[in-house]
Image (tube, rainbow, N blue to C red; front, side, top):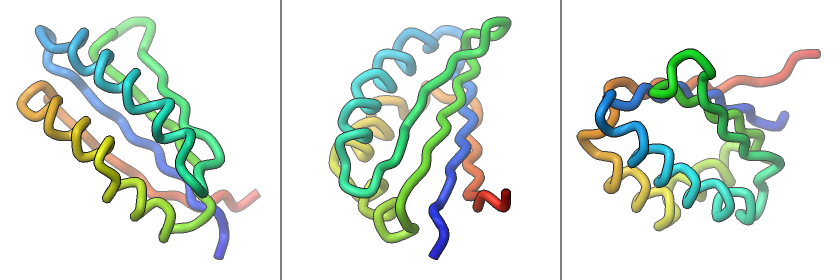
Length: 96
């Protein structure tokens, strides 16, 4: 199976940007250390600091599922509950 790319766009509530960013910063290193993680890159929009983009590559959908089942991911979701305006995730496969 081809490697799996995840592009997640997160829009924090205006008064929760610092909280969401702090929680993301906790999540990044733990995610990068997971088996099957190729890269896990966090970006923040230069014009709109409430907009975060996470670009991830995983060895397979199985290891991605292990990531979403991991306690540190669940902790991130719990800590940012109510702080996020919008959260969209696209699972993609590189074609060239």
